[in-house]
Image (tube, rainbow, N blue to C red; front, side, top):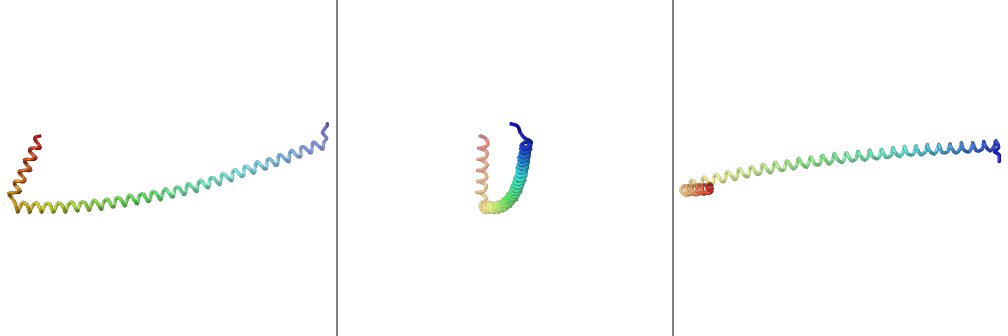
Length: 123
């Protein structure tokens, strides 16, 4: 079987048409991949921005909580110091009253405490 000139031209023409269609399909796939890559990049950027904002909010909230905790601790410490000073003042007044009203009992208690300290110290 011999191939005529018309058949050869027809085959070349169909091969060219097929090649052009393949080239168009490959270009379309490349464009789709590029568009998909852009969409993924946008989604990742949006996610990163949202995560950054959430992290900043969490940091601010933690800092506010820490500040309020320190303020509470400072207030409680001041209240405890005030209570200790009041207790010291009342103990001092009680001792002064006891010494003034019962001087002999106070001397006896002081000697007894001194004796106990000396006994414990020797052991």
